[in-house]
Image 1 (cartoon, rainbow, N blue to C red):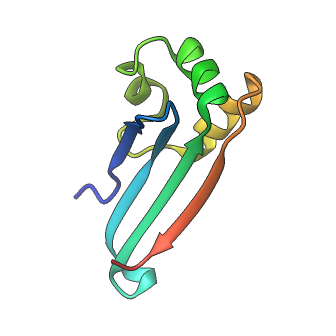
Image 2: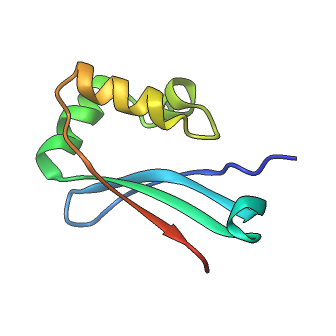
Length: 89
C-alpha cells in the first residue's frame, strides 16, 4: 500500500510548492501528515532550470517525494526553500 503521495504546484505569482501527503499515519493517531516545501519566484526559476521539465520531478525525487534527495539537490544548486509540516486534516 502506498502511503506517500507526491504533489507539486506552480502558483500564479511565480512561486512553487512541492511535497507529500501521508494519510492515516499510525504514529500520528491515523491522521494526515503533510510536508510542503515552498520556493519563492527566484529560487523556483533556478529549480526549474536545473530540473528541466517538471516531468523529471518524479524521476529525481520519486512519487513518494524523498525529501533528503530534494534537500541535497537544492543545496547542490544553491536553491533556497522554506518548509512546513501539518498534522491533521
